[in-house]
Amino acid sequence: MMKLFDITEKYGKATYAYPFEPYIVPENFRGQPNYTYELCIGCAACGIACPSNAIELKMNETQDRLVWEFDCGRCIFCGRCDEVCPTGAVRLSDSFELAVKFDKSALIQRGELEMQTCKCCGKPFTPKRLINFTLEKLQTANLLPGRLDDASEYLFTCPECKKAQSAHRLTRGIEEAIK
Image (cartoon, rainbow, N blue to C red; front, side, top):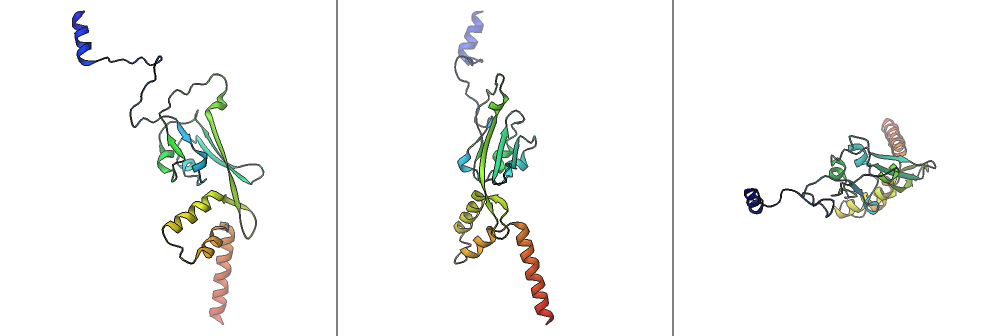
C-alpha cells in the first residue's frame, strides 16, 4: 500500500475533482459551437458545410429576414462551421455540459438578419450585411477605385435581374452588330 502512495506522489494524480471544480479541457477541444450575431453576415457557408444539418438558414414568413438557427441537439461537433465561417461568427467553445431538463429549446440558438431588396424588381435576395461585407472587402483590396457606384449597382441587383439585364445587353449587341 505504501508503494502506491509513493507512485502517486512521484507521478501525480490521475483523476480530477470534476464535479467539485471545473474541468479544464485541452487546447483543441471541440465543444459547443457559439454563434456571435454581431459578426454574422448571412453567407450560409456554415449551413452548407454542416453534415448533420444542425444549422439551418431560411426566410421568415414575411420574407424580409433571414433566420439563422443552430440546434445543438443535432450537432456532431465536427467543427466544419468554425472552419468555413469567413467572419468568425461561429466558433467552437470549450463548453461540454449541454444537458437540459425538459426544455429542448435551450439547445437552440437563433439570429435574424435583415434582407436587401433588389433595385429592379424589389424582391429580397440576400442579407444586407453580406453586401456590406462584400463592398468592404472590395474596397480593402483596392478593386473599386472610382467605380463604387457601378459595383454597388451590381451588388444591389438580384441574380434573376442580372440575368435578364445580361440577356438584354447581349441581344442588343447582336442586333447592333447585324445592322
